[in-house]
Structure formats: C-alpha cells, structure tokens
Image (cartoon, rainbow, N blue to C red; front, side, top):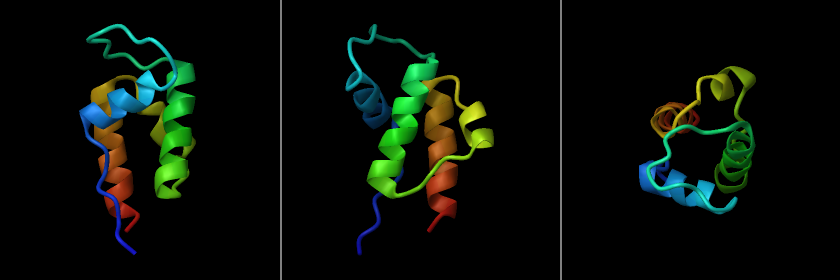
Length: 75
C-alpha cells in the first residue's frame, strides 16, 4: 500500500474551498472549516485528529504543520 504524503498549503486550501467560497488569501480557519478539514484527513488518511491537535489549528500554516506532524508520526 502506497502512503500519501501530508498535504501542503495548496492542498489544504483546495480542501477548504470544497466547503464553499473562501476569500482569497484567507489564513484563519473557522470552526466549520476545521470540522471539514478533520473530515478530509479521516477520509483520505484514515487518521482521526485528537482534540489537542485540532485546538492547535487556527490558520492554514497551523494546519500544514500539525498535519505533517501527525501524518509522519502515524506511519
């Protein structure tokens, strides 16, 4: 089975755009987007994010960092 690499900024922004219109350059992730992001990670990687991990995600850059940490340690 081939493991997927952690998502980068562009991929996370694409995932968030799947929820609806997002203003260009928006950095902050709101609660609905965070729930959607967690769902995308679970669907694509089979990994459930903990409450502590979710609490650390407030911006797109936070999401990139947390997901890289979680997905590389999950292997």
